[in-house]
Length: 412
Image (tube, rainbow, N blue to C red; front, side, top):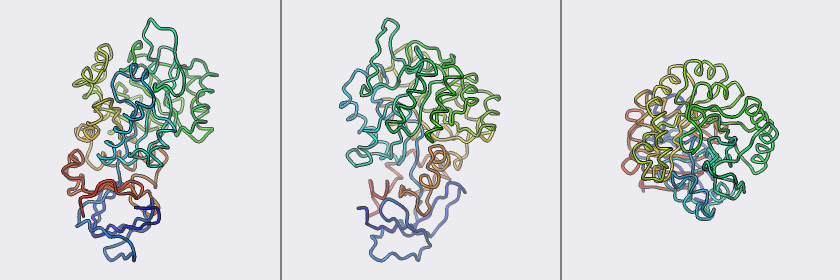
């Protein structure tokens, strides 16, 4: 559909994520890349192409707030040695797969850059809207420093397909944040604790000083951007929240003190439960080094408890997956994992309105309203009744529209 084309989706049952309700007998007019008008079944649009939704569910496209589109393998250190052209080609396949599953916006949490986002925006790669942060900030020996213990040299060339840039001290942090923003970053990622995929740190460590974290937040906010913080333990989570990060990623080992700080600061929580299950089951085969595979079990069992704590405490929870390599195919499995704790309506909000608010696209993404992006899905069953509907796109997903362009359509 071209920029000036119009398309009328009629006879639709519109899923309103905010209200958690289905509104029958609606019509949605798309013009260019946006929703132009919403009305009842009698809405007319002379000259517009019409598609009869036949009473099926029309809902906003999904948002994944924690992806790594350049991570075509779980061996991140090895991937950093490959040609960036090869990595971009593999990323193109990953991006297309995400759109095929109904994700129309994704937030990359380290690895993607302005070139990849531009290629998607201009249509050279097929995929969801890509919000990128460039390289994550890591301290020496932190999560994001992929050097083995015996290596001193670190190649920090921006075109190298690594996830992190090593910075130590307030001045280096400020310079790095400013540089990522110069390159167009939508957000800045800071490693607040150890992690699974890094070779030399401990999951239970805290990383960066408070002054360094605060410097990153200050620089991001000065440019009307924000910081997302990778953290597992309550100590790491709480330090990030006190310093002003906008979202905490993972947070598997947080506690009641963390929940109180989330409420106090208004920060968002982005659990990524599916990646730990996938890594436990398939990580070794996908290239995850054995030392990192052993660390998966430090956080695997605690993830659902952290989600339950955040849900019970009223923390805004966004959808995230953090998958690597061939495990990207499990992206929709996060819905059923969360269903052990949350009602379907809340999980749908996490992948639409809550995630849109987190990434500063409230009212534009994750909703069906006038002037919002024309990111739309048609399903033949309601995910409010069965969240598993979203996990079976080949069976239930009948139409995918991204920015006004039809990517998949079996209605006509």
